[in-house]
Each structure stands twice: as structure tokens, then as C-alpha cells.
Image 1 (cartoon, helix red, strand yellow):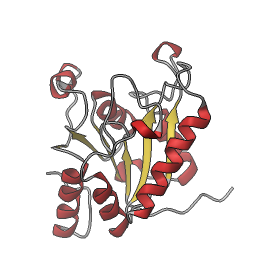
Image 2 (cartoon, rainbow, N blue to C red):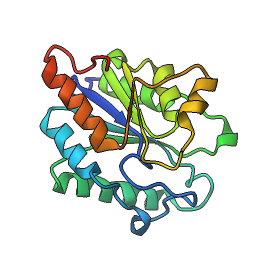
Image 3 (cartoon, rainbow, N blue to C red):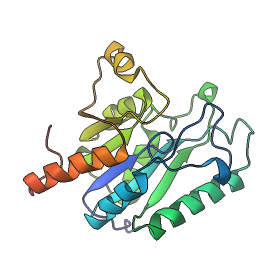
Image 4 (tube, rainbow, N blue to C red):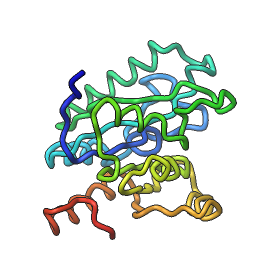
Length: 200
């Protein structure tokens, strides 16, 4: 089967705490989905600069029986439509529906979702960026072999760096939020057109 075509510049993004505000009670409807300031602009900038955006997100609300799959699909359809209306583009959303106790291979920090995206789109993971707000995201990036792991500090996780230090893991970049991180990426890309994965 022929692989779907995407650009060579791939960014994997976590959802909650990166694109939208997270909640300890989970995001269970579109009414609860609130974009973090600057995130729509960041996605627009990524699209304008030739990046492919793929979401990698844990959504155990399904197997916790908090919402049906149709509700999550509705949230994601509305998300993609809103992003597109603002000039951005999300190529695909890969999500894990499992609870932590189910011990699946796709729930972050396990890299199963990224491997699924790699298989579908024939991605060179060493040339990708993974961005998230939690230790699980950064650990997932390392386990998957992503070229860079970027931590954004716009989520609910306030002690991520210490948590990562206990696992001997560190991000390549720490940014305030998605827009801040994207500006860093684009600045480095413009400084050296030969690569957008340049160590800070």
C-alpha cells in the first residue's frame, strides 16, 4: 500500500495543556474545550512554514466510560475545523482510549501512537519534534526516537523537570507555551535552512 504523503518536517503535539487548557476533570465536550492563547496562531505559523502537525494524545475518557467515542470524535472534528478556519492544519489525531491500568502499548509514555503514525506516513522519527506539557510526553519522545522533545509550561503539570530528572530525561527546549515554542523552532529554521532540528 502506498504511504500517504506529508512534508518532511513533522511535529507531534500533545493536545490538552498544549493546544487547549487542560482540566483535572477531563475535557468531555466541545463546550469545555478552550484554546490556550496563541495556540491557533502557532498552528497557523506551522502550516505556513510547511510543517505537518500530528496530534498524539491520551484520551482515557473513552474507556473510563465518561463519554462515548462519538463525543470525542465531535471534539476532534470541531478542533480541526477551527484550526483550519484560522489558517492552520492538523493532518491527523492519534489517540489512546485506554485507562492506565489496561497496560496498553499506545498510552503515553509508551510510544505506540507515534509508531502508528510512523507506519502510516513513513516518517523518519529522528527528524521529528515531539511537544507536550508533561513528563509522559517527553519520555514518549525519547522512547520513540524523536529528534527533539520540547516541553511547554502551559499545562497542569508544574513539577515536570524534577519528575524528568528522576528518570534521567531532559527536554531539548523548555518554552512557555505552544506559540513560544513554535517561534523558537522557526527562528532556528531561518537561521539554518539546512535543518530545523538544531540544538538550542
